[in-house]
View (cartoon, rainbow, N blue to C red):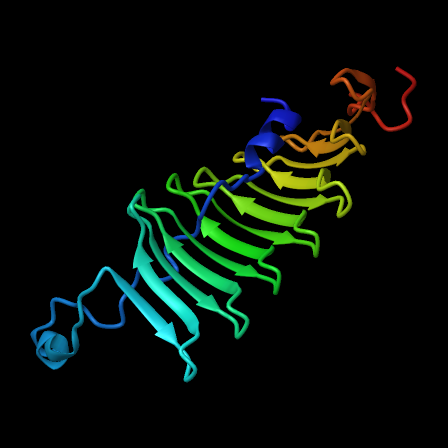
Length: 212
């Protein structure tokens, strides 16, 4: 598998709400008779819970959507949604934070297939940085152009432990790669923007200083 392919598989792309496992544990088992006896009288069942302040303005909402997603959202005094915790019917879950205009600031998540990561966004809503990992052991850090939202630098490690550094141009094309194979052999490749390698520096066999 090429370093480019291995690295691309290590980059995590989130769609929708994603983050799981963070709140999956319980401090006390719900099966405990003592816990059940102490809390049965305090249990309230409803499809939606709304939290309001002293003036009656909504500050929080907890409900389950028609698609089966459980959502807890918190609002600021202006009524803008600033934080959300979501758990999907497929097991995915996500924690998101938003600015005063409602634009994404940060998202932490785990998808249903076990991919997990963090995404950070700039003031205009474009992604600026991301970190992700997969259940197979791949991981990557990606930095984006704050003006275009396109990836510019990627640093990743493939499942077999092969690290790679990739530089992208303004259009998002892969232009330079520095990598190490699992056996320790390094490589440097330069591309023309259309995916064709135009120059490279693979490790040369032989003794140092040899002209052969």
